[in-house]
Length: 540
Figure 1 (cartoon, rainbow, N blue to C red):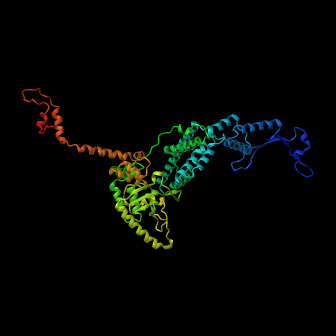
Figure 2: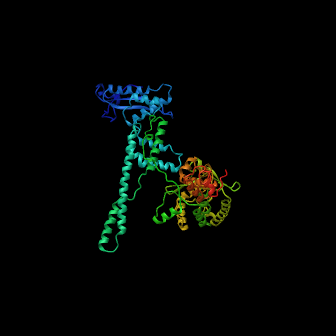
């Protein structure tokens, strides 16, 4: 390490070059500026680097800065290679950015605690680093994280220093989200009222046409319909931030405190699966409203649908979703190599997922989603017939056939599009005259059928690809409640009882005044006379 050096910007008028150390005015201590240069620990790849800083008005100022740099370099032990590199990285960043040197005591504390030495890292910077490290995350999961970060976390918290983030910051963010929700609801209400008024105005008449024109112009200036950030979405935003901060804690970027663990939100609500009973169907037909976002068909309704799609090109896929509970992507993505005719089973090892409008191949939603599903005899026979039809299509298309190896494909062998499959399902449901359900609700219906058939809930959970039976119980609690009531009725029916009318007569007889033993009526059996009178045996 060398001491401070002085230089100036004077140039030789004859050559036009800088004098450097040969400047004749350097004998004046006030001439020029002072600079320092310190050799740092080599980078991990072995390249050299140094800390440079110039522009000090005096030698004393330059020396003070040099002492600070040397003190920071002396914090780690000489044999602490990682510590020396961390300090050198920090000093190199300070040199390049021209930021002031960090506090000695704070740097020493951070290094001893294994924390990052960049105290100015913002929440936005860390979220970008954290998201970049999620390369192996499934596309849908990474997309959800990216939306939470881009739409909510960075706009509200991005500028805050990561190590200074606290619960009030998070509470303020969620308060702002809820205030925005009120604005969105008001805007949606105004737009809906204007559209309803526009529909109610007749087309004929000058005044009506003027009014319609004015309303259309007003509607064009309004914001389009927008979705509010629901309580469930807010819980997901909180979970995203909590995961990012937990990683920061694990890597010792911040102290062992996660404010996302302590912020309070309203409890989220998950819609429960409800069965399309006759009463619910009647209410839907009258009002057009579904009792719940998640609805499942009765066995009879499911049978109606399966009868309606007999002969459909994707009949087997609909059947497997309805009976085996495949997810949409799992139904679109099975391969022939995963089907075993010998064991009559299908291995769910891949799926087709929708990213925007593009279709990507990926693993099942969870590790538990990788599973082997047994098939019934009829489904197995239909699969073999489907294979023959596909071979025939392959011969018809010739070179234009796209050999993707998938069981269910488009006419030319190419991948099915999950979004188009959902649209097709809705059209089939409407054509069958059935109450509406989503394609994913057909999977819920499979679970309902298995539970109603008395299949153990653990087997149901494994068939659906749930990681825990608690997930299955939580989603299908209403169905389980209905089954529990049915079981209670079945238990009561197992015990033989006298007819209800006989029991009622006995109860009325028991309410009569009981005569004393040996009274004039000659009754000496006060405990059984009522039963004897009714002709009922009292034998035990």
